[in-house]
Length: 399
Image (cartoon, rainbow, N blue to C red; front, side, top):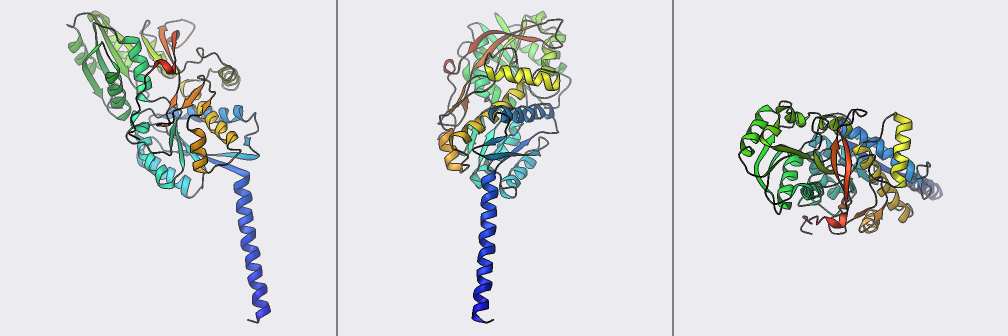
């Protein structure tokens, strides 16, 4: 090849390479890609769908309807983990590796989340956990790329313990036999200072008949003196409050539990007076963000927003607040340094990412169930707000 031609050809190559680089830069400059890995199908499908709705509504609210931050368009890539840990792990790797997302949000199940955590560390990319609850996520399985807007087992447990932890109280627990249930019971027990736990009942996730488990619980509690409480930690479609139909009150046993989605609260209707603590019920938090969510959700879906809708929106607002502060910079280290200690508004109220373990500190609400004929579910009436500073949430990540 003649010298001049070769130089021209090399020049053309250089221009082509430069154009490709410029195009890639322009593309990355123009978009912020977020993967949302969640249970679109599977046992926790109802939770996942609410989170997805809330996340998109949150992006809309936080960007004033533009779906852009710092001139960059937000693109959400949804992936269905079906509630299976291996799926979640592989989908997250594909999101970081193939889709080249800037960060990821999800998943629904604690079991799936625990499988995903090492992937975030391997790719050195952010994973914002919402709504998986297990303490281990921001505890001993945590790494620095993990943040969580969802509440953890300890927040659930401590707020619920505040409701029932009194001298002379004997408690039995009923929970599912996997990370969510076992971490929840452990955190609950660790929190109790006065009440005693006499029995722990763990049943398979798919349980629909609670008779045998309830009988073991009744046997363990019925002869105990003083106040007796069955505390229930449950996720999914089945209704453990069917134990109320077995008349625990015959033995002086009361029911207590955390909050849940509206279809599950229908099960609470058989247990008026049931007390517990939850992070959200649409009528409880009074702030402009929640007001917008309740109004818009009712308008669009002819139904109020639910438990996980609020969580999805909180995650979106954390993401947008971060990106506003970084002026659209999605470099992982920049995101981490911005989010550590950051406070942000949500429908649940103001929340703050704790620097030590990246867990969002948030209020919980002590409620008492009222059976109101106008509602298909047991209505959680506010007893009092339990503020973040009123709960000593342990740091479990040994950082």
